[in-house]
Image 1: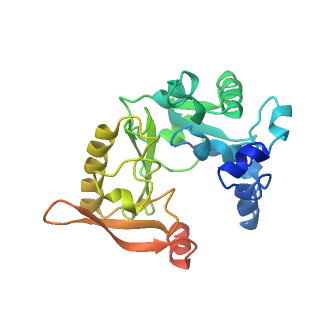
Image 2: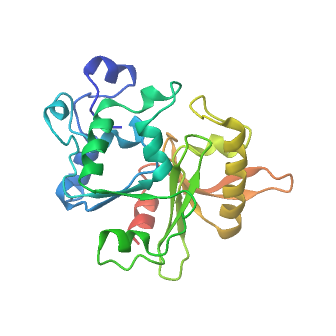
Image 3: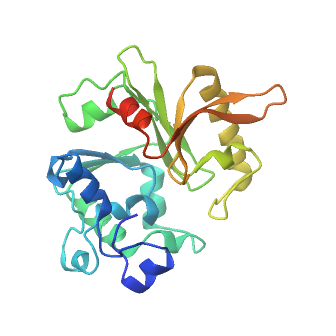
Length: 253
């Protein structure tokens, strides 16, 4: 989320304390600085998913580039960038001032690689675009959805060279386990009927291939696998609680 809002607005969203950059603190706790990050994949550009990029308020207002990650390059979707730069009146408030300032600067500096919506399965996209030197070709698959916001980019990441133990970043397609019920949508979803269809397609594949789903907004469960019942409903199984050691072990394997 990040500390980029002034205190009055931050308190509205329960950001406590409003000027504490918790993402930076968590990175430092893992002996990682913002300058150590060279690649950031953004699912979409709503403020609760990109706010952690920015300096605290009001510091970001004094920067030409408000991002704290000065050495990073970024991967996101073409449609996601277009939506942020030309939002609909209904979701304009989700794309905040430091984001627009940062996008303008980064696009000028060619720090952003945009994946087109008709070509999300790019072999080695991360390695090729950023010359990272990492062998990531068999690690990443990118899947896009439009129901929540046009051009949301989902990362499917394999934890081993054989392509097993896959983790899918749900973003706001499936914010938490409650949204595994297909009819449930969110007031922020731009196209509710479409997101139901997209969830069904993703969850069927996730159940069949044994993916772990990584939930961004669930207060209790950080991730789970899913199973599909005989009546085509989906249920979370093998849930991993937020802050549990099991989750840490999985992501550091």
